[in-house]
Image 1 (spheres, rainbow, N blue to C red):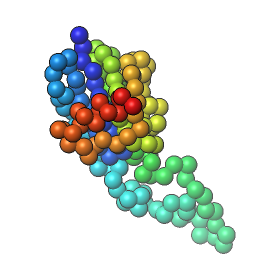
Image 2 (image 1 turned 90 degrees about the vertical axis):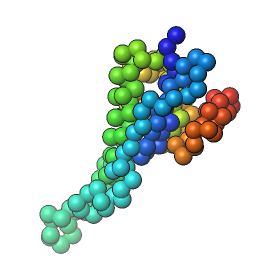
Image 3 (image 1 turned 60 degrees about the vertical axis):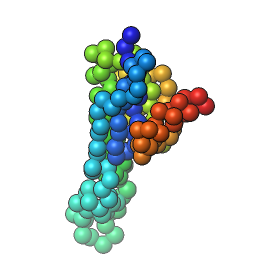
Length: 146
């Protein structure tokens, strides 16, 4: 019987856990996305919504489609989704449960590939990234139950 994979994530860090039958949770991999913690001003060269090339009176100002911080969060969601998809394609796990904070949970689900989506057994809108290993097992069981 293949194990269950559990992803605990937010926009800046994640832990991929594995549950084998009759065994405690083990950490498969930890992910950190340092750029996701950066301020928007550190991620872009210019002030958001302004175009420095227009110096005429009444110059154009516009809002970017997506701010730099959200782009970094989406990049991290895509990285995690690709890892989950690769594991699914390799047959590394039988089911997948995701615990992630909102709106990162939606971004992550949007990037899941077909195989990982097929194995997705549940999603929970809760951030458990700061929960220690001793408490984590209890919190996961509590969230799944209710």
